[in-house]
Structure formats: C-alpha cells, structure tokens
Length: 472
Image (tube, rainbow, N blue to C red):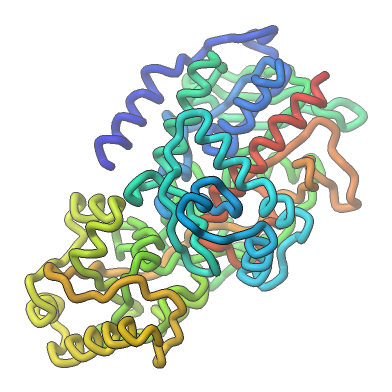
C-alpha cells in the first residue's frame, strides 16, 4: 500500500503535465473548468471530456487524489454484477433506506434516491476504465454487503485514483497541479464566465470557461471552520489531507450559493491517537471487536460512526483497542498497511496480548471467549451485533489503539439532482456545478462508510456531463 501511494504521488507530479491542452482549450480558456482533482473532480473531468468538451482541472496540491487517496473501506453500490456473482441480494431501495436511516432522515431524499440508483453504474464505469472493485464487503450502517473494493479487500481509494488518473492521462486532459482557484468569475447577470487562479510561483491569471465544476472537497482540515460550526470538536485531530480546507464552499458562498447541513460534522471512531491514521471500517466489518482498557467490549461495533465514536469517548482515557486475529488479517489486505506503519501490538495468545496492553488478562480472555461463543450461537445477546463473520481464535492476536477524529463534513454547497448549485431562494447559478464532499444534502446527519466514494464518483459524473451540456 505504501509503495502504491508513493508511486501515485510521484506519477501525479511527473507524468501529468502542468499544461497539456486538448480540444479547443488554451492556457487561458476551456469549455469546462474543474476545481479539485480528487475522485469527484477527476470523474467530472473524464465525463466532460468524453462529452466532447475541452477541460482544465485545477489542483492546489502537488498531487491528484485528495482525500480519495486515503479511502480504504469501499464504494457502496446496490444491484451490481459483483454482488450478483457473490450471491448478494441487494437493491437501490434498500440502499436508499439504509442511507436515510443512517443520516437520521436529514438527507435530501432526491439526492439519496439518485445516488442509490446510479451508484451501480459508477462501479460499472470504473470497472470499464480498468478498476478492480471485485471484492464486496460489509460496512457499518449497511444491511447488506455492498462496499466494493479491490480483490482481497485492498484499499479502494488508491485504486479509484489510479484508475481515474490514467483515464485523464489517456485523454490528455489538462490537469494543473499547484494551481489554486481563488475566485469564480461571473458576468453582470450572475452567469459563470471563468476562474481566477494562482499558480505555483504565485502568479495570478484567469481562465475563461463556459461552465465550472467545484469538486474541492470538505473542510475537516480547517480547524477554525470546523469549530465555527461545531464548537465541541475544538482540538480534535483529523483524518483528512492538508488541502481539505473548505475553499470551494467559500468561493460558492461569495456568489450567493446556499449552504446546507454545515453543523453535521462526522468523527471517525477508529483513528490512531496522535498519528491521525484512520483504521478502515472494513476491519470491524470483517469481524474485529472493540475493547476498552478494562478488557471489555462496550458497544455493537457496526453501529453508525457517530454512535461508536460517542461510545469510545465514554471509555477510560477516551480510547479503545481494535482486537482481531490472524484469520481477519488474511481476509483483508488493507490491514497490512497498519503493520507496515508499526501501529499494531501483536502476541501469540490473548493473555500475552493483555500483558502487552497492560490490561487484565482474565477480563480480556473472558471477553474474547464470550464473543466467540456468540458467533457460534449466531446471537450477540450483549450488544446485538447483526453480522459476526468469524470467531477470533486463531493466533496471532492483534490490537490497535484508536480514538475518534474529525473525518467528514456532511454539510456544504446546496445542489439539485443535476449537480447545479442553488441559491438560498432555490435559483440555479448558471454554469456552476458541484460534486463530492464540497456539497451538502446527500449524507444528512451522518455518513455511512462507503457512501462517500459512491457520492463523489456518481455526482462527479453527473456534474461533468451536465457542465459539458451547459457548455454547448
């Protein structure tokens, strides 16, 4: 995983040229300008290009991918070929219900309906582009296995970024790294006409555009902005990359764009303290349990992220341990990254692990036995966990220290089902589109694991297609 990410960084810097014009584009003009080169931005760029339009992608960071690079769990989709091959019965209606329930029905139903119906098309599209999304697993909040990821349960984010990056390179799309969008330009009637940009040397220039897609991500890495909307998150670490600072939200706001759900900020429950390394939800989905410093389970590990985060914060020192065994390690390639980073405590027996963690041996042994008995009985009488795929009884045994950190901002720019940006009075800002974490409404009060990637690819594609259509 480390080598793959490093290769991704190097190739992003070395292979994608700063200026590589296509179609009728020029240094200072294009049909469609996309702000942000994460999963949503690259998906939008590829679709706009394939609709016959010249495209410029602006990325303020030195590499493509954004937070998508860090995604590990999966891309949620219902009714896919991959599910069918695995004998999984799922539907867009079930995905819709899970998503609305997980978001406490604060979600925009129209956006969720579209996501639930078209996520399967996003998986098929990525697969056609060469991506491997053939493994399907369970993530918290879902009632069915619908998290699509690489074969063997590998990290999905790097796979999506490398797939979309190659698609952009093959199409010679103009991706400009170290180029930060600073302002969206409109005419006297409020119609988008271009973007002001600052390049690597600090020089400012303006790109003329017929339409613009904002795909600049959320604001989890902007502590001041996070605290502005949710004061009790002051001092929290974040799982996000340094560029997730809410620039796109601020640019849209200056044009009168409406914002929704800004106070809905999600913490991810399993982040390594002081290192800001997120442990994928797929570890719990594949069978890991959470234990506290007393060696006891304290929650259903597959409850929604906000609930599990709150449960961990209620434990001694506001931390917990993810406990798993060799069987789980072999079932999920993504775990190897945590071993490579020396984040895992390991032992040949449960008692030895307890000694290393400095917790009561008898308590931990009893907790593990009780859980394994529950798996055998197919009934978690204590915490009602619905899915217990494996007993945790095969040496070696492992533990990772975890605590919650700011992970996802559900709020952002208000859009409609065409990914058009809306004002507070419901009017469309002509020529302006948005997709991904920069938008609000899709996830409501809580995002389900696996829905972010479904969101960015599905609405990225919608934004790209419609921006290209408007550019006609």
